[in-house]
Image (cartoon, rainbow, N blue to C red; front, side, top):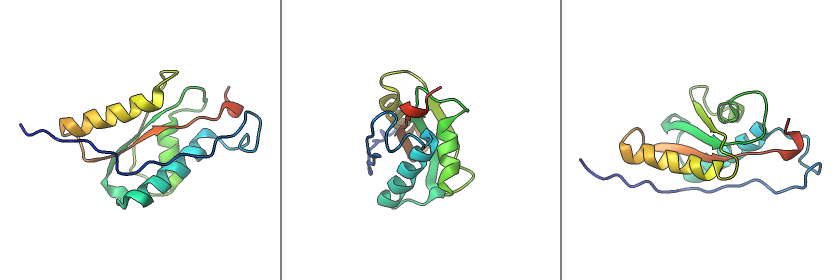
Length: 122
């Protein structure tokens, strides 16, 4: 068996706002979608190459925020999504899971990270 390295080829984040501030009306999945679009653009990968979107998210209602973010991008409807709710460290756990999947040979390209909107938390 050959060893596969997992590397980060693009890193993007949204602006940080105050709870109830300028970003209060923006849902977490919309913030996540903007990050995904920019990450894919900077990495110069085709959307069809992406195996999965893995996001950490703690306080949102309405379902699988990773999948909702992937759909919101408009890149491709075939992007799946996995959301991790682990309180502190969910985004880092998402990156770890993507790296494990690459090293195991499950795929080559993953989008991993996290998204939150504390202003819109249920």
